[in-house]
Length: 351
Image (cartoon, rainbow, N blue to C red; front, side, top):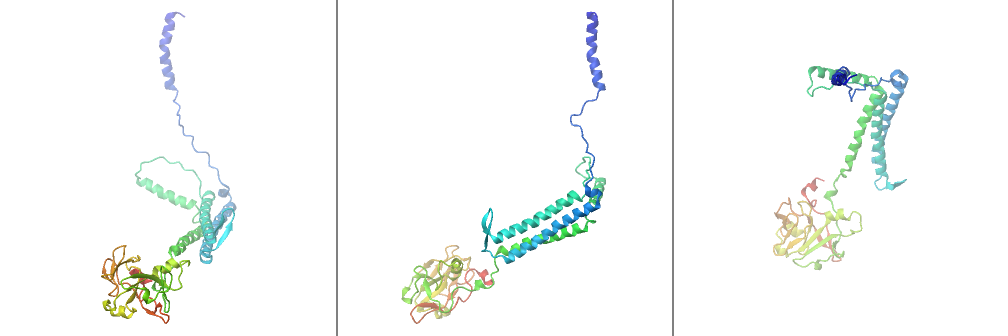
């Protein structure tokens, strides 16, 4: 072949290559592999296997119901101060362990039953659908409703009555666990907020020295704090009880006491009032000798101890409760009963 023929052949080569590439289709690097052939489950072709799965689902839901009942029974029956040894955790509260175990079983078996139902009884046919705009057309809405009805039918929700009814039972009982726990918001107060440790014949004990008080121990113009005889800081409920029973004593000249009942309930000018402010329950500890006023440091509520402990300034709602006192045969100051009304904030009176 001559050099001229070779040159002509090279000129025609790109055209031939272009024609060949135009005929051969381009390869798609992201080809759709398609869905594998659907494989039927045993439950799809064997009704006995399907019934076994249904009984398994029902058993799980029934266990959930029993666990919820056990949760409530444990909450009612087990004392809060009982401890047990659980390996490898160690010593833990029997109540907390029982509540956690039963509630965990109740929730787990509902989830396990639902998963087992979906994997063995509901339809598992893969459905491919084309992407569509976000806004649904009437045809799409109709198709969605149709698919929903088909899915509901294929789920066996209407056919598998045993599984369905036990599911309803488990879902109905589980919320009871949360309702029962509302009891832990606090014990009902009953009437205990209306009463304190003060009672007839209980001596007034100096809060600082823990010694019984005599009238001569309280000087005119002084402020003394007291608590009921028999109370001790070592008692487990001391803080709760002292928050209601804390008492302050002031000695006034009898002629300076304006309120008749206050004078009748005093002893030689010694008046006893609750130390707990009637606004939000702060302890009162500021006293003005000249005016006979006491001031709450929290929100500046001011009370007149020479006029029945009435409020003269601040947000407090009512006067300080007074304790009736006298001197016993041994010369010690003692209470003649409890406070005339509940101490502390006004809302305590609802207890």
